[in-house]
Length: 141
Image (tube, rainbow, N blue to C red):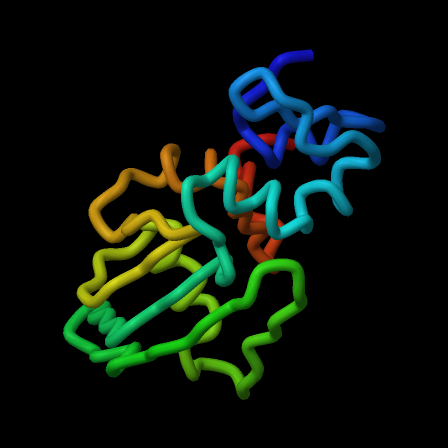
């Protein structure tokens, strides 16, 4: 398989070979290879250290200023949880990252400024969202 979207490679391949101008950089299981700093630097042009970077994010919904200047960093290769009681903006933050609600501020996903991108382009970077309710296909029985 020849593929350029790393999320597809990591999800499907058992082994990968990374080439750089005809030279083999690394070969093996995808996750350790993609965590290799040399591979990351050579395949992206620069080392990606953060999966998501948000700066001064604001969202207003129906006249209510829901997110008021949120800034956070999600490091690559880790697990980050957004915690809080009901109604404090956890879901709105995720929806803003995906471009599902209008927002202002800066949102970077894998070093790409995505604030003005449509949702279908953002999800191609490997970001997904599964809503907590079961109304995803409300018209189906």
